[in-house]
Image: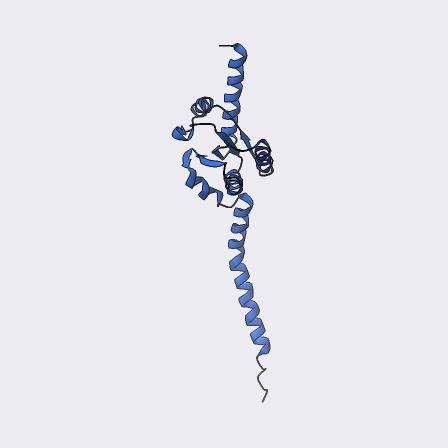
Length: 170
């Protein structure tokens, strides 16, 4: 085998391993039929959400999965695939599902999240999860609710006692 080709393959495997280690989720999509401009639009949209897309040979991805110690994606790795590496669990899948609604040529095949192999339906479920900021917002609203209710109750009691007529002095 040509030494340059071997080095290129090693670099591709290293890039995939790096993507696997630095991502919370990896989504596998079939992009066959997308135009170059549509693919570039997808790439830009993913970059805004702290995710990236790359096209690698399936055999190199299998080797990278083994090297990283992740589960094998099995039947998902058939045909031409693109791999989306997302730093946050739901950001990449969210963009892909939204993009696939308007571009039927993009097909979500499955993925990998927290060491578990996901099918296309499970990726759709993950896409509906809130991102990190959404989770913090939900937590803060849960923490704030009891205090808000307590303050409203105290105010209602204060208003009620202010409305009550003062007892007549005899």
